[in-house]
Length: 283
Image 1 (spheres, rainbow, N blue to C red):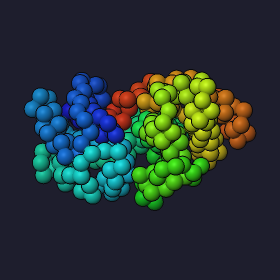
Image 2: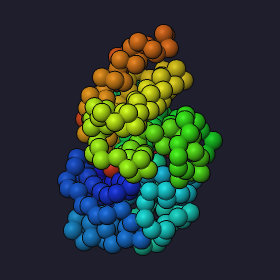
Image 3: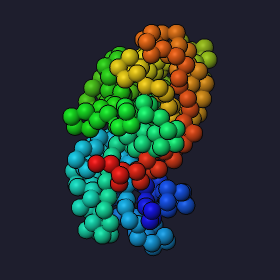
Image 4: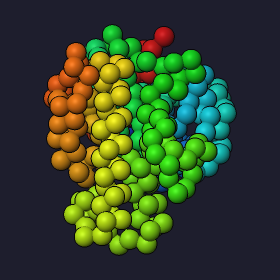
C-alpha cells in the first residue's frame, strides 16, 4: 500500500497521521480549525510526499461525504462541502470523511479482530459507534450511535444540538466543566467531584455515573456486542471507569448478553486517525 494520511479532527486538536502499509510513520498536530486544515495537509505533503488517499475523522455529524455540523470544532471552510471534491481540487488526492467514532470503531475492529463491538468515547462529548457482523451500523443518515443525545435528565443549559435532556449534558468533559461553572464549584476533576464534601459536587458525579451506565446498558440490550471498547480523554484520565462499566454490565445487563466485557482502548487517541485510512476500503 502506498502512503496514506489519516486526519483526526477533534474538538480541540487535529492530528494528521502518516501511514505506509498500515504502519504508523509520524503525527503532525495543530489546533482544530477547519479554516487551517489545508495548510496542515500541505505541510504533510511537503514533508512526506503526496499520499494515495486521505481519510478524515470528524468529531461531529457526517453524511454523504460532507461535514454537516461543527458543534465543537472552529472554522466553517468545509461545512457542507464534498470532501473528496475538495481534496481532488487542491491536492489531486481522493478522500473520504466519516464520524470520528465510526473511524475509531474501524481501527478497533482491525486491531482486536472482533466482528461485534461497541466503541464508547467520552471526551469533549460522548459518542459511540457499533460494528455488527464486521460492518458499521449507520442508520438512514449515518447518525446511528449518537449515544450522547439519548434523552436522560434535564440540564440547566442547552446541548449544541438544541436539546436540554441529552445524555451528553451530564456525561462528557464539557458537561463536567459546564456544571462546575454553573454552580461555582472548585473541584478540578471527576475524582474530586466524587469525593467532595459538597453535595452539589457529588451530585454531578452521580449523574455522570448514572448516565454512563444507562448508556452502556441501553446499548448492550440493543446491539449485543462482544466487547465495549472505552476511550477518550475522560476515560483515559479515569481508568477506574472501566470497572464501573463492567460492574453495571455484569450485574444489571440484559441477561442474554450480560457479562464483564468492557475494556480500555489500547489505541485510544490514535484510533480515529488509524481508522480513517481504512475508509478507502469501504463500499
